[in-house]
Image (cartoon, rainbow, N blue to C red; front, side):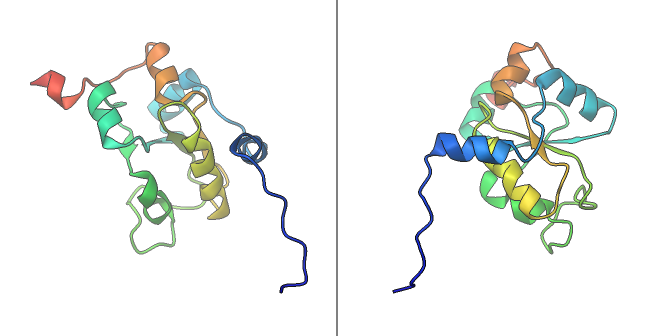
Length: 140
């Protein structure tokens, strides 16, 4: 018996609300402009089936969610060349903006204090009419 009190369980909605208070989320057009001007790196964590169905954001790094922390940790042995330091501005993109919030919070725990995520995810990007490369199957 640990003798301490157990932490209060929270549901996913409360957890999302909590982690999102730790940073400012970004809208699609602002993310596009930040990436276009070199002020941010876009990171697409959607799984392959969604990328194949809906296409890709030109220039975005594709990193599977289960590899994200290893690939973006500036001190890690498996980091990408883009993981140059803890002040890197990363915009994490999932399909609808939920998993990306948890991913951005995880990056904050690694010290990537400028990490954020895209409000409403890839679907908001596409709805805003921003560039999307056709899925490989559609390109022939």
